[in-house]
Amino acid sequence: MSDDLFAPRVPEEVANRRPLADRLRPQTLGDVTGQPHLTGDDGVLRRMIESGSLGSMIFWGPPGTGKTTVARLLSGEAGLAFEQISAIFSGVADLKKVFEGARLRRMDGRQTLLFVDEIHRFNRAQQDSFLPVMEDGTVILVGATTENPSFELNAALLSRARVLTFRSHDEESLEELLVRAEAIEHKPLPLTTDARASLIRMADGDGRAVLTLAEEVWRAARKDESFDPDALVRIVQRRAPVYDKAQDGHYNLISALHKSVRGSDPDAALYYLARMFDAGEDPLYLGRRLVRMAVEDIGLADPQALVICNAAKDAYDYLGSPEGELALAQACVYLATAPKSNAVYTAFKAATAAAKQHGSLLPPKHILNAPTKLMKGEGYGDGYRYDHDEPDAFSGQDYFPEKMGRQTFYDPPERGFERDIRKRLEWWAKLRKERGGR
Image (cartoon, rainbow, N blue to C red; front, side):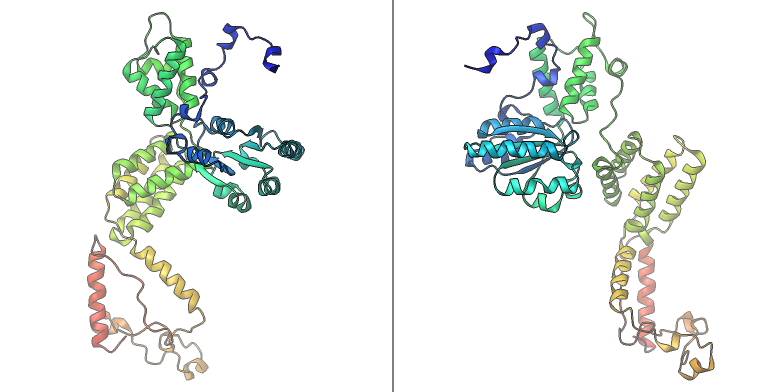
């Protein structure tokens, strides 16, 4: 007899008060939205189930993308027992209890899928405790994390589990969730077309968030009332972007900003700069990153880039927020529209490698000072030619250690100010050859 017969009956009106996100929880993998690369007909998880070879996995992705739901559905479709724990609330004793239960099921011929939410919150020793039960097949581990597994999980654990990436919902999949919500509520959202689009943007790729926002709209709406974008903001307030200054949101956006500047796209660069301001990023951190971009990606192609970035940082110090943000925005646009060169950056890396390889070699004696008679007797300074006394203020001497030979690290491109530098270097190379230097 089914245990469900003895379960207390929940009145329909109480059941309907369950959160909308819970009532819309998918019942099969095919119902999952936003992750076709995983749950679609040709998705990774679908292929695993069809092959009958489910292995341990790490689900990595932002909140509200369906990690918990997919894990539960996976266990059902694969015929596995489902156990769920949270690393926030569980300790060693809880893990031992779960492992023992999984061993007993295995003796009865049934395998366990153990879903561990926020697995990155377990310390290294706790993460190591999963290794034996993964290796002997006691559990199939599915860990969920919003943090980059490469940084937060043990290498030993990662080597035994496949990392599957869950993507933020796009506008199309969030719209699909709203349509499903309207069907289950038997009424349309009281929003104008523009307000509906605004609500989707507010959700910031989070499926759970878009349904929660929809619930707030329905609760707030009076009979025959419809909200435009401004009214929507007043009703639901503004939802902050998903962004943690210590974690992936921070690194993803600064990477996008840097690459947009490097790619000479001022509009994209301004967009990512504005997003980081909007998310509460430290403006002085952004100022430091702009200085780094100036020396790494513009360099001597436009020597003013570094000057302007430092001036923007000083302007922010002087003006504060929000007025000073405009100075950083100006520097950002300047960098994105400046000629690009990583010649100094590349040259410095090459010179550093050479310094490590030849760090024990002495400079040639003719360029060394001879402050004592002994050193002068040893030939220090012999043959040195003072460049300012030479024609064209250039002697053409060799300055590298004799055993090392002449090296070339800096190779300026034919762009921006470095075009002039290149001509100068070529002229000096010609004079050096004529005057017997290397």
